[in-house]
Image (cartoon, rainbow, N blue to C red; front, side, top):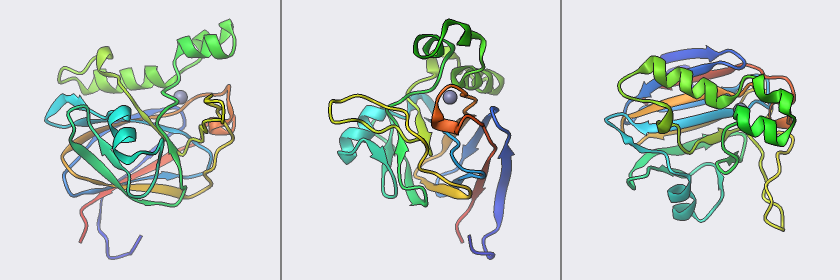
Length: 208
Ligand SMILES: [Zn+2]
């Protein structure tokens, strides 16, 4: 980042913690994978209409690609462009794998994993604290930034070792006012966080 850019917002999200913040139209939003191999499970809403939120189907259909990277337009359920990926030093982000939950942890790993902290709990904590009418049913499709979830030749999803590394980032330009919610994924049962959740950094600024 150029030193002339004045940072408006700069925050570290500790390992396993949620984060929620608004991004204004035209602002740039960067998520930095500080130590590498850390999944950033992310929800986006139209800041003025929470029923209008990120849609994986609309986004995948419009770009004819299941992976997200520079140039990907993140579409909403009502067909609006929420943000556009402007720069990406990681190269690939997932939007098929969903967010980890206590239920999926039990089904995928073991019954006793039920009590481990999961992304859906972090999302719920963030939106309930935010208030303004958001509740559990509003947790919809998410993006897994920095997460490597390749689709195999026979159509299966696999959670693979991360393609990200220390300091890699993804940067978006907001095409409208949006509300962003991140769960810095606490998952310990698959390699999406290299079995060691680490902090993320988020930056928001007005372009000069
Ligand atoms: Zn997770």
